[in-house]
Length: 347
Ligand code: 1WB
Ligand code: MN
Image 1 (tube, rainbow, N blue to C red):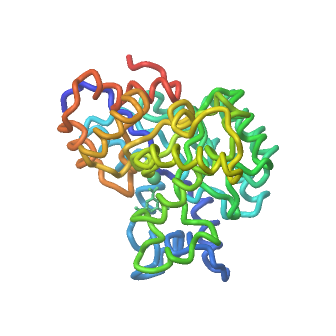
Image 2 (spheres, rainbow, N blue to C red):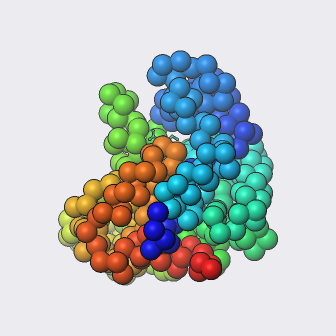
Image 3 (spheres, protein in one colour):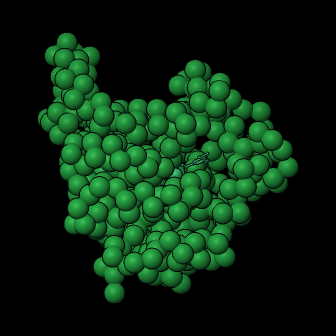
């Protein structure tokens, strides 16, 4: 494959056996969590049909780096995966277990990145439900382990990052000047009801509702007045937020006028433009990409595959063919990721 572009895939999932095993345990306790529909049977793999992602054979792909992933990257000309612990990360575990497993996962991730420095960079995990320890782990992940940013799988115990208890995490991200990627997990408990049927809990719809709502909460809460330099990345072609941006902006100003939304220094459109970037993960749609680039600018859109949940070949073939100038394609394929995640230039 021609090496015309540096291809950096920015939302690529990975796991370690210890986390997978702990997720397997969570699925054996009675719980209403909507995540269990996917997480069920994650480790022992005997869940059978409908048994979550074990039955869909994702686990092998998640645990692997060198056997299948790298050869597939080579085959399709993918230079780099930005790796992160797969959803829901450590966020279903108790705070102590989550803190421990996040550190272990970050250590392993750093090992992979050290071994293959031109092929992998990593987004660190942390336990949001232990915010001060999370902030210390974030410092360790960047300063000692050399990782490139952070991943949070949306809500933690049905709470969102606009909650002041999480501010130490946002402070740390801003001080370290690294983005937080807000990746989906299933919708929080009170948001889950209408998503329980027809597979709607999944990446088909529920995941996008959850992260889109999370992003809008952050914007409307006024959080970005307190953390003006905080950079948030959201996947799946912006989880549709920027498709609503005109209306969000218009209606938020009305809600501010009638006292139902906090007064903010900037408009919602201005926060989205300043504080967010999006990735294409799992949305291979020319029109959606064209709209995104025209709406928020070509510098704010990054390519992603969503490996192993979506296959590599069509993600590359789509991006190769999509009608963009070579200069713009170079930004979306890799240039923007280099800047946003501080990835060393190739060569
Ligand atoms: C799927 C996608 C499942 C993701 C996941 O389970 C995660 C799916 C944790 O496509 O079924 C993802 O990361 O996008
Ligand atoms: Mn993903």
